[in-house]
Image 1 (cartoon, rainbow, N blue to C red):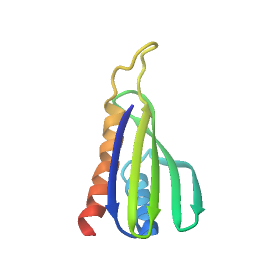
Image 2: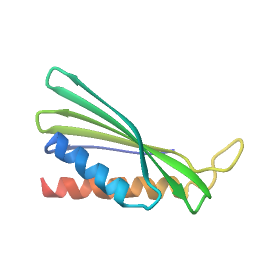
Image 3: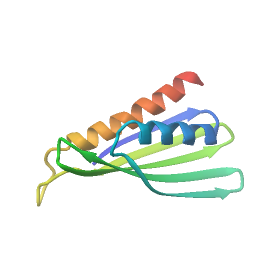
Length: 114
């Protein structure tokens, strides 16, 4: 499992669209699995789950992205899982790291524009 978190500013919907496009267009095997959206007052929460095939591990890895937004303040948490073929401990987590790096690059590109 690998994790990345960051606070940034920007438009909530614009950020979600940017991340979604970057993840789904960044790999031929990437797929959007499901999502959830909630609003509490002026605070919004979006959860997205993506999967893709990892050539390095020969299996699928998942990426869970949570975005919390209030006004133009955003917080993103991205966590990967899967990708290991070991029974009792994790080895060969290259697929997870690569998937997370794709997300990090997208977040940092969006933050640089703001």
